[in-house]
Length: 341
Length: 76
Image (cartoon, each protein chain N blue to C red):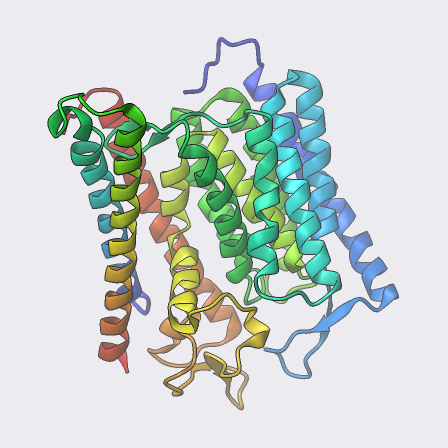
């Protein structure tokens, strides 16, 4: 739990790193947008009339904002866990940036992201206990492979939800709220403060990524957000709560893998799960062998515009955040001894 | 409300996660004391516990896959 009497000045440090991340991303993104447009680094926005060009990737600007905030936090606290989170985020960014620059096979991101978990293990940033809502278990050996799985899975899960304007960023913002609450209760001061740049950085970035997007995060942006989310959940002893907050995205990845039955890039899928109608709405395909995704399930009730789909996904994210908050209350009741199994 | 069906699906997923967590805490964690009465090596106990946990997660995945099929059949 947050210790306000510790050596850290939590409000000052928290406000400082949040402001750094927020303002660096807020003021740097327009410059990156201009630079990417000038270089011709744009992609078509498929779901809009005339398919307007949108600059990509925004991963570098997210990295700059978050990295500066984390470096300042490290200089203030000299806590190695901050460096572990930073290195994990940087490696995830590099993996995504390679995929942004060159079309890589489907296995590349899940396998390469395992490397992003290594700083957490090598720098000893992880604990040995896993909070399982109704209690805590000591798994010193099993925790190591679990970290590798968590970072790779969460990174790719956020990447897979980046299907429409603003969805990945908005989703991370919503999921971060119960995660931060969980870290504040079950984690530590440094984990809580180190997680703040991700929330405030994504809030600043949402201004440009929301519908209609002025820039796309690209794989470098989404993998950075996902891996950092996983890293702060691990360091903040909030793995299960963090997973519950991500359930719609987890469900999306699960449904896709369960139907495609192999790890492939979305662009490699021959039958699309959704189709674009003449009035630029999206509808669920009638093809039986098309992959099942979260968006396809949402559209089974009828076609929606891109903006409306985004709102439906945000409704689901808010709903799972509420489930995550209920889980926090249950976990607190059991870990504090109020309730027993 | 449009995503009500999906919210139901997600709620069932959440209940299943909590059930698995409760099962691990009640049954799997104290298995060395309850079943083996502390007579087996700690490493072997850990391997048994990890195997049971992985088995439960696989059952969870299979159940979710079945749920997905039922949901799609009802909607299509």
